[in-house]
Image 1 (cartoon, rainbow, N blue to C red):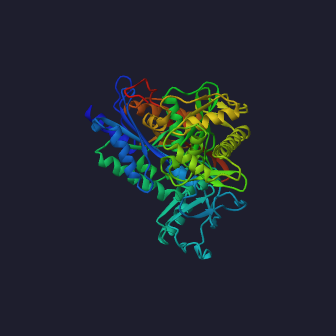
Image 2 (cartoon, one colour):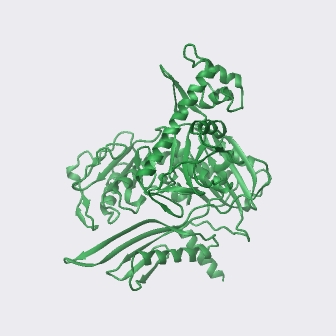
Image 3 (tube, rainbow, N blue to C red):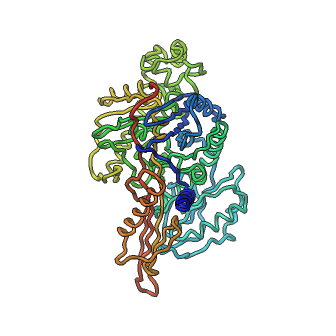
Length: 582
């Protein structure tokens, strides 16, 4: 028995699994932390109830202090040794992308013949010779002697991204190029083939680029989190929430930081589910923070998933996520006075004038209009007065500011509706293709939700729901995120075997093997291991699949099948009670 348990722990550690010692109802002490652009929230969940919650200002430039303040408040009187898991969500990465505060990246791509990539990526790429054909055969290697400027590192650029068409079938050219770039002085090189197993070259390349762009920001954030937990003697495993609602160990997330994009929005989606506020019918949820508003779509109580991957700005990526959009509108959004009207965001001005800030923010406009009530209202009126056009009162200016903010949010919703109409998007359980999405309700969470979302509801003619606990919904969603485990299967029907690398076992193929059989085998393996790890079992879902025929000597000899699946993300359970009032 001891050997069996040790074996399970070995497999769990190999796969970075969190072992949760569930009681009869699957409940343990869980800590959720959400680091937003304005506030850092923390919740401690115990016995199905929110045992403690805290909201403290995010200390920009010194994130550690804000996390410690939130931890001290939420852990007061708690036994930290009983915490079984810590899950972190954050808008740090999303905000950096929204505000354009990322580090420069050298992007090198191997497109092969016949492909024009102009305008497909956030920066102009360096086109490198060498390519892999559709069968995974290296058709040409990189001729470095013909690329005189390739290995001359640009001043101030320390990270690079490399991507090649069909590299998922053979990444050797990517590896060679990355090795040479590191020799020339690049500290880190992100590979498209390591960030996605699917063929879409454009999405893989953008994923590699954005991973490199946010690497410095996320690495600094990860270190701050580790120090904060160490300072408070918390030794529980730490995981980062992914954009699809799954979890990723912090160590693994640091190697693929693009997965940390949209973790804030994902946390709000899970938080809405955990609070029992998942709406029936078609609905739009909005999480209003200090820097951004995160928008997600729902159908019959389930969040919609983007079929092919998240959009970052106008660029498609391979990051699995909910069908969502993050726009640069929040309570701390800067207000820019124009010759006619105002511009709101995407820059963050800092704290509202009502809280001692130096300039008016969107939150101040809400205070002037009576849609929010905190701080020094007189300071908000004074700050708005300084922005008034000739003949304009503070109330009129505040309404114009609110209208400008609502325009940005409403236009984003219209864009999402358009995306819904032209490409397949599916719910967590059922594929919905070709259906019109006509929202019937708005659900608002986050500190700035009440005033802003009620105003949006009036404009759109939709009822608004603000669930109790919505102020810390993200931290609740993070705490209750179901642990997920992913595994892959590779099969070669010519050789007659399949391999699940995570198990370390190579098996003979059963008769009449195909993709469906591969899914059944891998799903069964995931469920078996989940039971052994005492994880709450759930349905499985396909992350990526790859299939192509093999030809030898002009004859079709078989198939190569690649499949990656995971236990479906979601919440462990809904909040059944509250030890403290929201």
